[in-house]
Length: 458
Image (cartoon, rainbow, N blue to C red; front, side, top):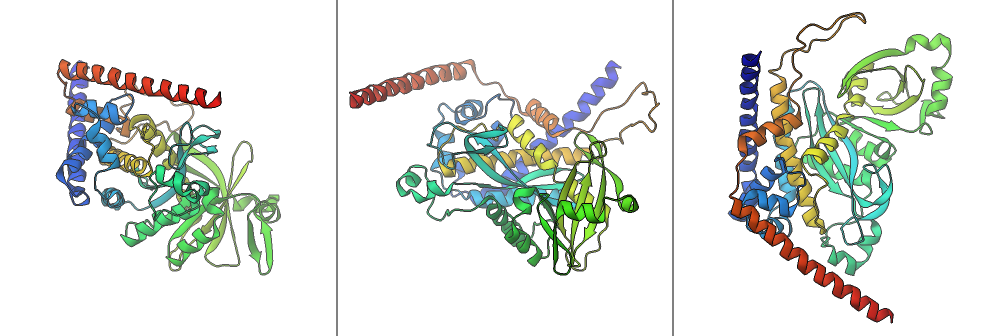
């Protein structure tokens, strides 16, 4: 057994080496996005730091990990250096599509995720609903698109949501470093901007999925239909569909009328789709509308009977089945896993920057680091043995159940093992001194500000 474990350990280390190679490939493709070599090299250090085992990933910790004496180069990379983060995002997207584009089902999953922030001095910050907190909180929301397949998935697009009141205040806008070309866009419009970029560089998948924020956006749905892109969008029970000419019905009423009675029981199909936590089984049905290309897809929980509704568009000339729409709807879930991995393992919400450009650049570089590990995990999955699963409820487990395929988190750990380099003790002692000195200056200025405020109040 010891020899077997050793051989398995040696085999997986190869995947760590592949992750290093994938990072080198992606980093090399970014060269044309940078005006100068030093920021380009610093971006490579930044991505390596994001893929490291640092518990917190911000300018200070990444700079120390990279071997820099101060965080100046890291902060310059995010704030002042001349490089096109929009083009970098495109390179990352094409890198992902190149690796996953041969999958039979490809879906662009739209969703937003946030980062809690204190105060009012961060671009995009506002008291708003934060999915990460599960409540209304002070923070920044960002719209993302995940390129999802059965073989793997990765975040490939991001746009920061900036509240209208921040954009309307010219002085505050300048302090936050929001460029003049940034105008107010709703979340659905930001999603449309991401998809427009994907259409422009021909990386758009055949299907788009999203939750109710995007499903109720008529202009977004029209944009997709006009560009020949199919979609399966979650909608609310009050969403109306035209099931007969001139007769619009709420989604829940349509189900009550056309699917609820016993005689329609055969129209429901129980479909099991593999998710991140195993098989998910629901009853599904679909209703035609007066448009030959649009359908209402309904999901019913097998135990509670709870219903969920999806509005679907099938482009002309594309055959489709109920199961195909079900699979598209279920490939919306991996975007949540992308957020989980991005935040827990790659520092997606760790940045301590405040300015618009710096915040977006941190997000883009995090997407690049996440993409490297996601693609390496997808490549490793093709070499993994088939899982051993029970076939009946009474099955007993075999003595050896084998191993699951390598996850994104495990690939990142293997990358760390391959690339780990110990810095000299003097380097870390220098950073102890540097942090204490910086914090002493911050404390001094903080107390002076408090004294000035007290003086004005008296």
